[in-house]
Image (tube, rainbow, N blue to C red):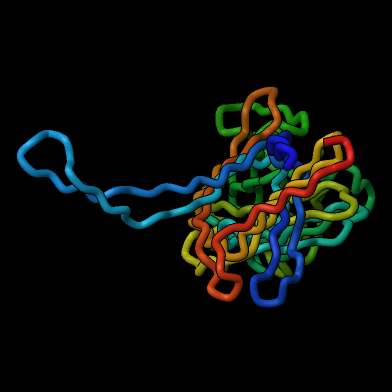
Length: 291
């Protein structure tokens, strides 16, 4: 009988997540930096007079999967942390969100405040992806603050003011464009009456294709178990895949951002035994012609 060649794992090609009930594929990410299946156990020792045990019995065995992701796909957030995801189609002129009162109630008001906000039809190219706070400077004017300067905004003070002079909000349905933002505001139907210091929030998105995703994580949802397949190949033609039919996510998930570096994001989940398939994980090794 010939000696069996050594089984060598090299590289990782990706991870697939599938629905446990239907087997349907829910997503595949080829951007996986690493993945580890760790099986741990313990022993219950019996001691007598000496310092060394005289007997031992195995205890519970546990298994988990952990890894590092190089891509933050929607389905990964959905299954690993139970995120709520809103997928928007392409926005040819960008998007200006509905204004929301933050401090006080006078800034957004259909009669005496901001009635609505929209993309500036004259120059929609000014719309950026940004988070703006509008703050009442007087009964009829407001200042604008940006969350950051990632779009080249000039920040005029420590609170990130971006307008050089207060902007007047017109009444009786009049409109005004906030310079450099692509936001057109429509004033209330009556006379404007703002309370100094009141604020509202407007979120905007620049032109995008194929679209955008809004991912919300509350941390208080019931996480859904799933199946996972890890796979890799070698130049010899060898193929290896590992099927984990019952993965229970722990919610442990890191989103990292690092200066001048691509993000690598860690996750962890438990591997349980699937009572129907009869295993916790199964490894399949298929030799290539070059092995």
